[in-house]
Length: 229
Image (cartoon, rainbow, N blue to C red; front, side, top):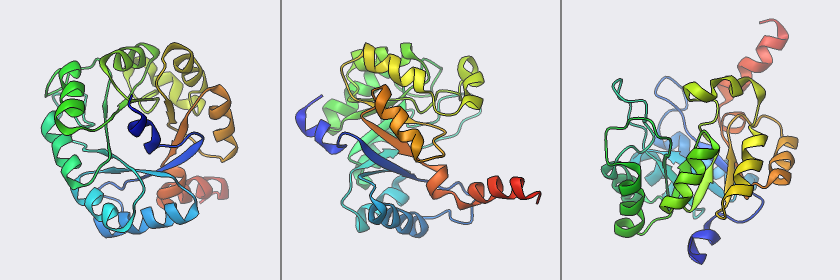
């Protein structure tokens, strides 16, 4: 990873994922731009966003580095996070500084992972943020040239589904930090601020938090369950 790529996400930083699906009342570029501004004012040092429209809206109001993705759902393929070069190209043009993609070995409708990482790095000049589920995913992505290795997909693939109930995958963070030389970004199921210290102690370079900060509907549901609603 180049020094410029490493400088995009500072050590021990919080990145906030500003995303809302179509069924969420906060869906839409204007809402995500406001969410990103609130996150920046609260101390976030990086943002994660989905799709050209949201990324462009956030870029217009924030100078923080944006980890961009494009979710393209296809029932025929399990990989939906930036599955091909066209997706990466679109979010780069919208203002993403870093391109995140699914780095598992699952079938995808697009370029093979090695070619996709190489094209993003060489043709777009953007660092790659590899969303991984396992240690093997992370080691492979680092060898292929990814600049950041993230635990985003731990708990969301068939072989790791059991981990979903365990909270953040601290064990995977620690294993990746020992296995590769590129920065490890912890992401997935962080619900309490105190959990960030566990991630940093395990070797995380940064932590991405989404739902617990930017999805008030899901946060409300958690509280409502305890209230018996």
